[in-house]
Amino acid sequence: MATALYEAGKEYVRATEELAMRWTAPEVIAEGKYSVQSDVWAFGVLAYEVFACGTLPYADQFDNLTEVSIFVKDGGKLGRPNAEACPLEVYEQLMLPCFAADPTDRPTFGALYDIAVKHGAEEDEVVRAARAAKRRRQGTRKGRSAAAAPAEERALLGPSVHHLASVLVPSVVNSIVKIQTLKNHPNQGSFDGLDPAEASIWHTVHGYAKPASESTVCPRDGQMGCGYVDTLVDEDHVGRAKALLSYSWGYLVAEVAAALSAWCERCERDPKRTAIWICSLCLNQHRLGGGEAATPEDLAAEFGDRVVAIGRILPMLEPWNDPGYVKRAWCLFEIYTAIQRRDEVEIDIILSPAQAHAFRRTINDAGSDAEAIDGALAHIKSEEAEASVQADLVAIRALILRYSGGFGTLNGTVKQYLRRWFVEQGGVKVVARSRPAGDSRLAATARDVRTMPNAAFAASLPAAAEPSGPVPPAVPLGQGLGETEI
Image 1 (cartoon, rainbow, N blue to C red):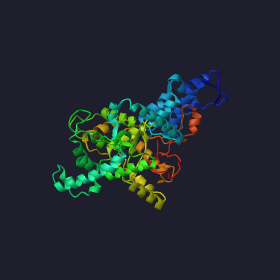
Image 2 (cartoon, rainbow, N blue to C red):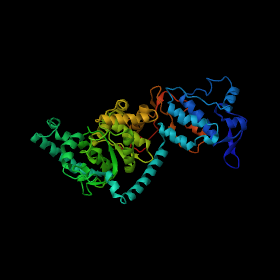
Image 3 (cartoon, rainbow, N blue to C red):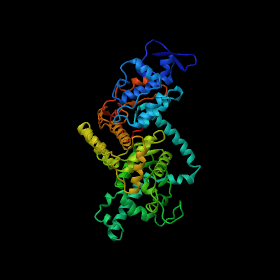
């Protein structure tokens, strides 16, 4: 339609007499003025087609193009497609702004791109690589500024991976043996009969970390009893966290240490200089549970600020085919927050060596295990997820409901991310997956549309939204476990 520019470079001139009326902005119909803003209008119509499963725009309202032309010139706008396929937030944020009568009021393609990603659109490898490079630059700047504000950095201290493997795990084992012998622990029943090698994070906190820190003055509030991390002083054992572990307290402490050690080895990191922020060891467990319940705003601010300051999150899947991780409200909230802030946070999924071996053995024997992976992803139901503290659960649910699309958007976004990770590990050797009818997430792969006219953007999307679900990009199979970036 429009292939040439006026001298100012902001308006197109018509190259042919053809006019795609159903996709045409009112100023084009009235004055023949094409621009990037008229392309934005056309994109809005394209988005309507995607969510309307290929329905011809205005076909349910008018019988001919003359009526369409009059309607558009008089300020008419396409309505919301089927409610089951298109959430109200997607219509109001992605489509409706494209139909502003004043072209200058329409969003840029860059803004539309960000909105599409916000609602779950998939980014290609080029964009993900660019985001990763940006995060690395930001991480360098953070490292330089950390030394200038040591007091503020105390909240970001974590035990080193070396400490977890060589000190914490053996100390937990010895403490449990002692508890079982003395029979004087307040939670004695939770330790009797326990194989010390099977100690969970919960056992670690109540059997070793809290007793080890109860006689140390907290440097944060000056009172007796501190976070476990505040008992550590040697630089081989404590430092500014390089990553935040996202996990469940039901995980075995030995498996957590092994998973982090394997991650350090794979990424060629010195375990003595790689500290990890772990809530059970870094928050003061002597103070938790006695104050007012956190508000949704508190949760969002505290976790969001911390994970951005650290710059990396390590979600741990244990076991790989039925991870308790995806059944915990805190875990889903953490990974979703990180995905939403992907410009600032690197996500690196980790498995313990035992689970990595089990995963590899399964896909080597069967070629893939799509059924097991589908089963693992089926457990992602944030509306049914649990939390140890009821007040936290209430606050997390309230926060999720404030997201565009609520539980459905969170579930879909996390499933999409984890499915792509499994694909990249070789666990699913297909690139198109089915999605239940009515799934509200964007089915298309998002491309960089910051300067892309509508015709080019259209070529990157399916002609219609099929009742099938997130389509992972074609990626090399069998890459190293846990090296995914988003």
